[in-house]
Length: 338
Image (tube, rainbow, N blue to C red; front, side, top):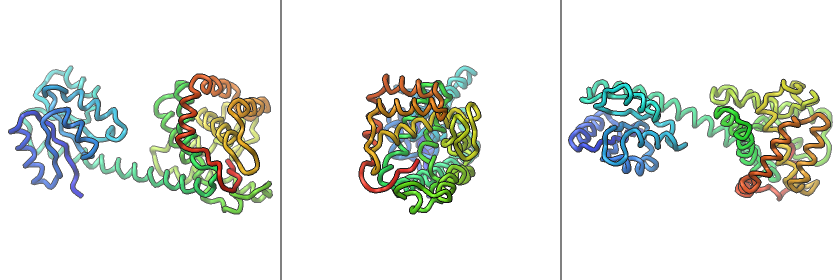
């Protein structure tokens, strides 16, 4: 399929000329005359590249670029600002608005093509990366679907872990890692047979050893994607314990990555407050008490448990809305083993 270019210029003649030239190069072009129209069409047209004039009536190019980059669906779409402005301050403003490149008027079409092709190649790589991530997320959800009692668990874990990470002041990339790891943390269970994963009652020693391999398998599955670099320690270590009795590496205390410690507390909370065939769900207060008791045994990070309790007290309705939106998985048979 031809690459899509959104061309935004309030001057009719230059806009029409560029549109003709770009179409001759095989691109699919949507040309609009102002910033408001650009934002209106951006979501439905889904351009691979935006060529954006800066000086326009109404919304100028800086503001349009800023809004494009602020939306998750279009923030990775490359934007080239086209300008007759030459001041360094204008370039800095463009960079601050998120622009990926600049072209000066009058436009040299050969230069425009060279820059466009370069940015479109990068966009193709980005799309391939997003497709790979989507495959991993779909695989993780299909594994979750093997046990109806864990329906929605990944999404709840992803969102609530990110809330706690944000509260603790983690950098944005670490919060993103929590979101990703929340979805795929149990992807390694693809290597665990249903006879083990859904077994009612205690596991044998051999079955327990097989189950304990899933964090390592999950890390191995996700490791080819560089975008998952910060999520890998979470995937591998979300079953470690503060006293060193967890798995797979027997880490203790501060050896366990902070992000893994965050996710494991939310994981345990979600498990305790979700209905299971062998027990009824605990209320929030009882679940928190149980987690604090386990922290006293040396399993979880006490300071994080305190912060998690405070977060639920302050943002309880938001957390309840997340849990309601992603269901509770109260029907079906299985153990919902975490």
